[in-house]
Image (cartoon, rainbow, N blue to C red):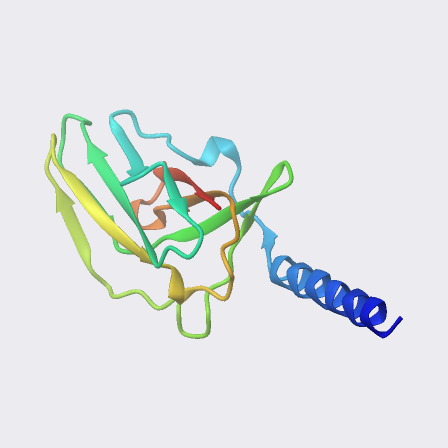
Length: 148
């Protein structure tokens, strides 16, 4: 009886901890029409799939627009929460970005390392996206998965 009760308490605690990780999520501020609107500019991740426990993800911006573009070093990270996207919260002081603008010539790429320790989130298996907010309108977006 004690073993059964202990097991039940452990299961309840585990469930509540998992629920807490997702309760910090807020609905995405972006509509699909806000994303990937600049012809010839796209974002991808270095890999399509990463293992649970990954420490960082690299987003790569490709410029094939026919002109030089400028991007600031800022982004948001979102996870697919059911059918909708939700914003992953930054840890305290994790959302501070340096005021750096990068010039990307036509035909060139720019890499942005997303350090997952900057977020107050456990990153379970699921679908994620990095939205490069420093580009202005068009918001290049790189999608990836984290798997067991």
